[in-house]
Amino acid sequence: MTLFGSPKRKASALGLAAALALSACGGGSGGDTSDGGGGDKGTFNFVAALPMSGPLSAIGGQPYKTAFETTVEIINKDGGIDGKKVKLTIIDTAGDATKAVANVQAYLADNDKPDAMFSGYSFEALPLAPLLTKQKIPLVSSSVTPLLNNPDKFPYTFQQSVPIRTIIDVLSDHIVEKGHKKVGYIAVDDESGHVSVDAFKKVASAKGLTVTGAFVKADAVDATSTLEKLKASKPDVVVVSAVGPAAAAILKSRTEIGWDVPTIGEGSAFAASDLGKISSKEYWGNVEVQMPNWTVKGSDMLSVPAFDTYLKDYKAKSAITTGMGGLVCLYQDLLTIKAGFEATDQDDAEGFAKGLEGIGADTIPDSIKDLWVGPKGLGYGPDNHDNAEWGADDFTFVPAQALVDGMATADGS
Image (cartoon, rainbow, N blue to C red; front, side, top):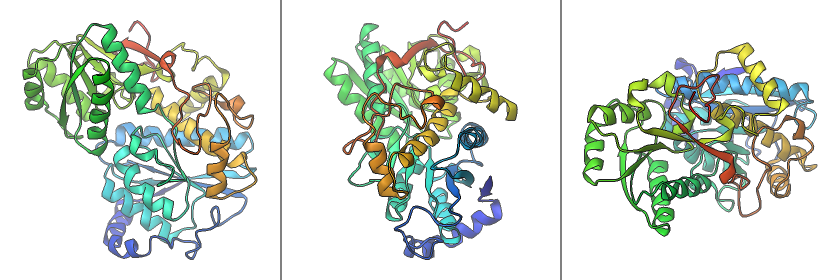
């Protein structure tokens, strides 16, 4: 495993950003973007762009690095990808979109083209997708933003996570069932956060709900002013779509202003955090979380031998310090890459895309069936690059709680 993006290397990458922008189609393979990755043909070169430094490092840095290291070992024991051993390289994004692009550009300029890449957070994946599309590098992301699901614009980009449309549909139905009418929706103040609020408003409106949106910075430590404004709109339920520091700040400020409005953490960003690591129990009153079942102990998703192996191997490397959903999602991302490349005889980006698009609904390919942890299939197609196999039965609403080994219990005990 290689780590790219030390402080010295990052400074160099930033200094070269303007020049590299002019030669983004080049890369380390001498400018040839038609093959499926250069270098050792016995090696599958997989590059993950992760925030190893910065405010998201404790959530999406070291824990995600360990998740990929664990997954690479499991896949290599199973024969690798297309018979090739997987080599993992980590590029540090510092949790910053500009640095993510600069560091990836610098890596591509100095190295052979990767066989496939990963980017997790929407604000990083969105600017990386055009760059990687130009170079015909497959990108699999755990981002839930619908902006990435654009096969015409990003033909080699796939999302292997809980689709935001499914999260919103399940969440809005739950709110209606609870008898609420007015929703306050607080999200992170970036492009994906605004898209999330707009998407929720459209779905909620069709179900008779009115929605007021509000936004906080990703690194916020105090959300008092935002919550006071949201409180003035008199919602009878609040949805929180934030992760890490922002999620903790929202819960803390909510309690400190004495607002005990029913609050729901939505099933993507918020559900990825372990509240026990970022917040205190005193701030969790009247809060529940929409948990994808890959974070709920004893769920059908986690009651399979493949998960037991993954959990054991991960814990042999490190204690679990974040939500299991994020860690399992990364495991799925690399398995999805394996499925795509092994579904056709082509070893390039076009073959990868055709492979995933042709697997079919409700299907887990034989190449990954014994390793799979997650929904019932890989639901991709030529017009959809976001896994459509998630449904209402794949979620559980649980009381806010500290996680144990990254997992929640249905009753919070």
